[in-house]
Length: 65
Image (cartoon, rainbow, N blue to C red; front, top):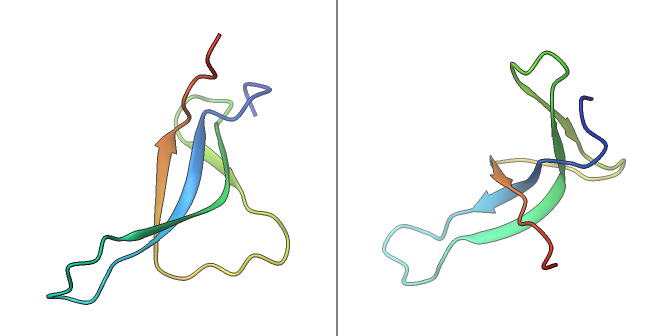
């Protein structure tokens, strides 16, 4: 991994049933780093986490200084 801190967070997103007025549910499942060669990502999901569905990786927010 090219940086010590993750650059993104991985979420599994569960969409509501069609016609529902509910919003999609987002569950944080892991962390993401830029790959060493700069052409991709490394996704780390903790042991025991089962994932099915749509996975979305979003840039991590910078902590307030």
